[in-house]
Length: 307
Image: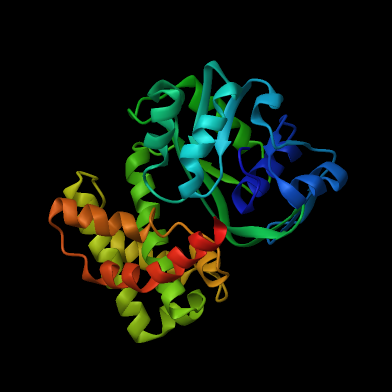
């Protein structure tokens, strides 16, 4: 698990709990806690702990592995892609699980397209403290697929590993790019609207003005996807809003939490991507342009502080 935050900690913990050998790549106080006390996961699907765990801040020291699940933030993927290369054999592969739609291409540029399998996950989770992950909502789900849409033994094997995990749903969609954009249609507009409103899902969806903004931003993202040739269904916006309606009242997005807490976020990989692709494809995206412009000053300030 390259990255042991809300995503890597939860799904890596479930794989370890199911008997898989898992190496966690982490750093700082989080790494120290993993080494000293193991991993503790507080989950609406059932609390569990894994101890001892294998954890390191040096990917090369882990040796080669069958698969690397890349669970860092979207803006950290290029750096992670370079760092994970020593972990890959000729038959190893990497699977991106973060938000956004560019991670697989970024990984392929660093390790080769043949070593990348498409992937995504759905979960509301975060680091509650060193060595401690909190899963606060949504049914944890992983979706995997070859980018050329062909079945493969390696996808079948990784799916089987997740099927042995408690508290995880897994799927292999016919077209992983469509599945990736279906998630993007939710996460990018919701994250941005919730960050601008500074409110959780329950408030965002029940306030007519923010719900309308969310619907408009989602419809714009759908049009951008279609101009790129992504075959999203006609009811994609309605299904996205229905998913938001099913979130816990207090659910927040990771990008929203990062922005509100003054950390660098995935703004460029989410709303920024919609704005850039809209301009490239000649698609008007005024709602997303408003959201991006509203959040950009906070993002720039956070990145200046992080230098």
